[in-house]
Image (cartoon, rainbow, N blue to C red; front, side):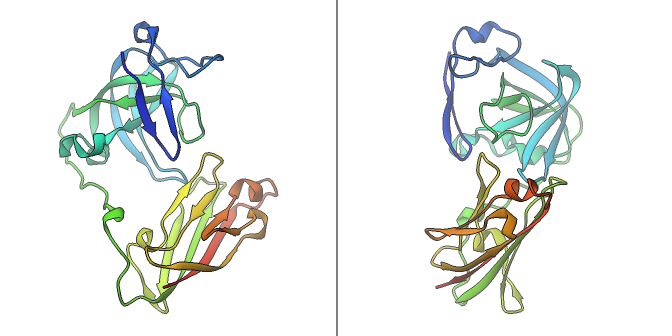
Length: 239
């Protein structure tokens, strides 16, 4: 029996109790959701590059009424072997093992998710490289000022496209110069790179762009309520 601490923008605890004996997870009106016993699932591992990016397992056979579950990789602070990180298996047929649960927040994109304790291939697989670790990178020292532009089509659930420019010079990777998060209410919170201060926040008016203590915010849901789907957010960063 154990409790799994899952950090996805906010901290919350998935409770483990007598649920270890049940086949499928369920909501619990009086408290945290009730997770299932550990399952071994098989299917194709897919990376969904959408507004909220996530890993899914398209199942060979439905489980708990769904044909795809979201996969959550705890990463264990780097303790897992390199081959155990989910992005390595993008596009491969795999087996995953772990408990199933139902989302308690909008940080999830599927009706059921699995906390992955183990993943292994079940067919020949060309492993992919891991995603770049933007957190280990820093803005170039010769950059003093740059402009950030973020765009998305909220109706098509497209990914957020981010660019950062110092004049005509494109700054890469853009996430180093314009780190952002998407909160549980689907709002975008964007910042400048390390050592820079923000000014001149602009964006799609229906999305209510604002500068809140050096963080640029925009709410695509507010714009969508007015049938405005193409959203932009821009700001300037200076040392």
